[in-house]
Length: 125
Image (cartoon, rainbow, N blue to C red; front, side, top):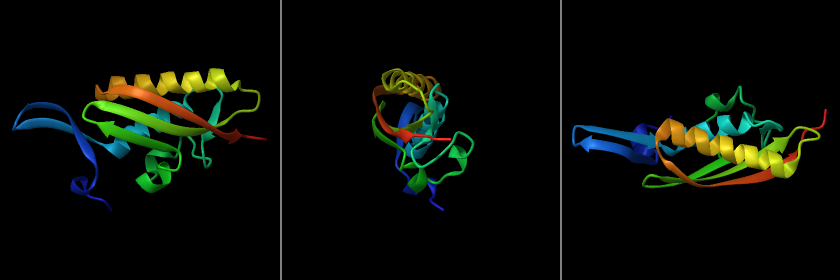
């Protein structure tokens, strides 16, 4: 298991030497993944990763569908989703972008520079 010191983390708040808040990259990736799967029209993240299993995945498996790049207090997210049949691509991608941006900004206080959405497929029943 990866220890906190081995992960890539970024300080998002520092009051003084005794008090600071750091957020690991994979935490932001989990937030992004959960938010993306909540968008109407999204069946799952790429690879069949559903909302129910995101929190149990390790960074390697989640990185197949969500990647984050953090620079100080700014975040860029790349995510790949599978759509429900009949979902409009532009509308769904925009919903994913909004959900991901809002979730990261509200939960972390970081500014989301960009959310890139790749449509990996359409789920057929």
